[in-house]
Image (cartoon, rainbow, N blue to C red):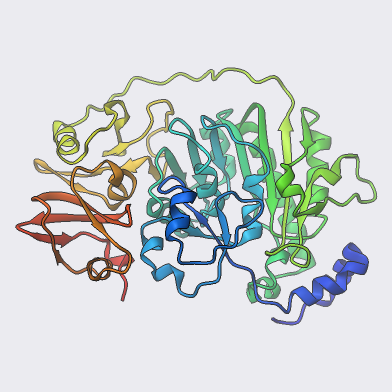
Length: 451
């Protein structure tokens, strides 16, 4: 690891006191890795029977495991979206509160998608996740990860938080604000975080974080929760930001996190001039105390009484082409016709209970496919999210010759009848094929194929 900036060392010595030496020693160790089981595709119990990776569980994440396995991105289970690789400390914020399965949740700064996919696993059939990322290239990565995990009832948006607040005012029961920060908690993992650190950047980040939180207030329902998180240690970006927010928003309070998170983190720090007597309820995740990188989190609760949703849905203007329903009838065992809608000219599978204005989303729901002349060209997202409902399934094991061929982009032989079929690895969909006369014509996206 690169040498730490002198200003940073002095600040951390003041912050940690006698714990600083243990912290500095922890930075000489290798970064801790982890993964989560995607419970939208497979239960933890079912995955544990297959698990070829580390079996050591993360104590505060019910579906989380520490990772000790090289090149996991090449494994068929990763391609099938059965797992999401994520740093263990970064999993803590989404575990801070109990989430109701019908909530509408917003992840304001979502790329690459770790916290978004973790939150979606906690929602039921009627829950909705909106994941926002301001940078288009990162939004594509975010959308790709949601697609790989086969998540339904999700929306990705690509806009600044000021525009976001005007698009979905008062919509959300919970908002994750994983704010852009100075990245001090990532020093062991990423040398670039050390290169880019400066006192000036800490101050700029704190200013931006306060603006994001202000916009989050507009987006939140009365009685809702904001989980504020950073991967840094500075007081300016953490406790000072929370204290300033609570001072200007008397309708909010800081509340305790779940016990499992509390047990693996340290108290928030009371600083000179702090008005919030309960700032200790904020949590700090230190690499010298828990297995993972640096993280800060605080749960901010709107104390006003929760009200019923007031917005009403507009009548759908676009009709569904019969080609779409005929296609769905031919390939799926069942589906809810109310969930088949048009968005930006494409048929998608998405809840009718949440309106997304035309052009507002980068991706909305599960893209069924492209309507061509008298037929549908199915989208990879459709196979990944709806594969469990397919009439024609090609079941393969993770070590089979066929799955290797498929992930490489090759055809293979099959005895499945002609038509669109989903390829499954140990029960979970990994993509689609068009079966013609005993040959599975490969439709795995070229950009995802193995070498």
